[in-house]
Image 1 (cartoon, rainbow, N blue to C red):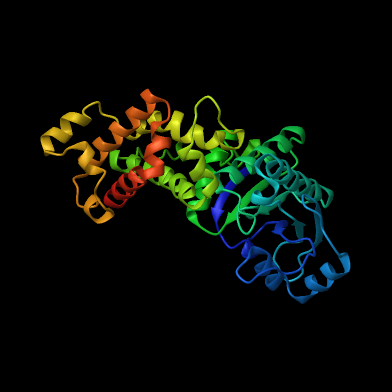
Image 2 (cartoon, rainbow, N blue to C red):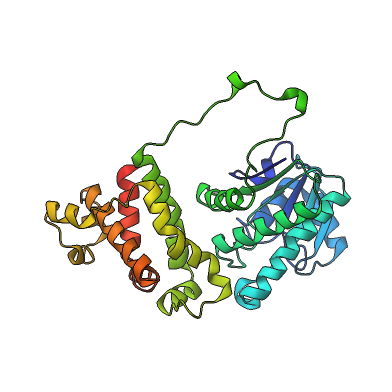
Length: 336
């Protein structure tokens, strides 16, 4: 089977039997620009009439209707929890329930393919990285308990940035998920296989920067995460932020080595360029974008090394001050 995340309009997916709708308690069509509204428009007025008769839907519950004018056969409606109102631990439990009940509802209808939006990240304010972690974990647990139940599970998302977030979690939790299973008799001969070309050093750094820039933007938009970054304590860390800690503290340095940023020559590079590291922290975005990429990479190396040695200085100072944001953004824009 295949599990994937793509940038696509969920109302226009081909060959998908069930589509999940993030609805509200009254099963009404929601605000303009929401996934809920788009699905109601695509399905046509008959969906509204059916939802009116059904009445209400509780948080975590899943209710199935026909898809009417859409290409899918079924719409599975679920109400997601509020990250702010339900707090992180309860909200994650309820979001898991949404996914589990939607998958059960699809099975009840014999649907072997299902598409989700990014449940919880709209008006419910779930941080995207955490919503993706909860979503993929819930799907993995369901598939472990119900092997062979689906042919395809897809997250159909509004932006490539969001798709990249979900794909990163899928790749980590479900290795091989992007490969479509083929019947034995259709196995491809050796000469048909295509190897991916090796990424250039600059391409690796671009991918690295994009990944962490998305996380840093998330922190910048979420006051809870901002406060946590400023008050970070390695000995007393909230469970709800463990994914962010893992990304920013423990994986950043090793990923930077693989991307080619960590050369062991950072200070030497800055001296050759006549640059004082502390002075870089005073630069604005425009000035940062005029620097030699080697200087930006050297500055990131120093910052990541400090984080590795001092157990979280990057989170306490780098993220909160925005210095790392500027470095990563400038390097990404320069090399892409």
